[in-house]
Image (cartoon, rainbow, N blue to C red; front, side, top):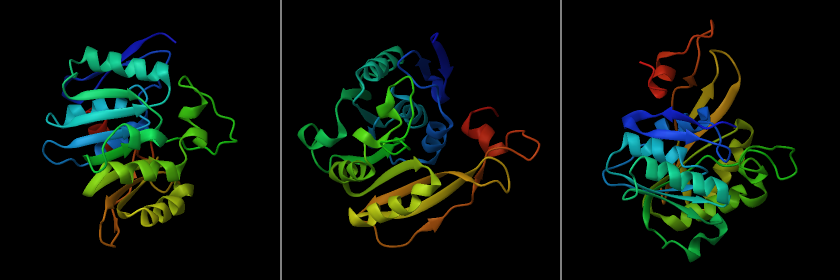
Length: 237
């Protein structure tokens, strides 16, 4: 695959190469869903080539992002993206299995954890430029993701993730189990009236019960033209 460069918000660029996924709708939607406070410290679990961290750095000029990625070529691509944008003081990529996070990063050390995790069960037939682990749960099971987030987050910190709607029950149950209370949920539809294609979920470490349902995010009108919110997310306006 020939390298190409995507332009993101805030003058940030993202180079897509052989070890990178193209800039996905999932990452764009999750990046717009995340709400950070001032000087937020963020960890991206399964960060790939750094797309989500770059999006957040573009939106929040004072945040700091550490990405954890097990696939070495993707990790190297993330390092290159960080260097190309001059973000060495604000962003880093660590070649690390999230199951080893306790040996690498201190507990309660960040304000926010984000993740665009694998969607498919370990036995599913799924391939991609970053290898099967980028799409299958074999090396990133949902419960392991929640355990890592719980370890990293300070009390009151937020865990944001995007996933398929058929896993929503698992997402909610694991949040309750690991003291990451589901707080906000937003469903994504391709067009008005179409089935839900993705869910965006915010959980809070030590949060009180109470789930807020946000209005559905619809990407395109019935005629296929992008909605205003879709244009804003992709900076097309």
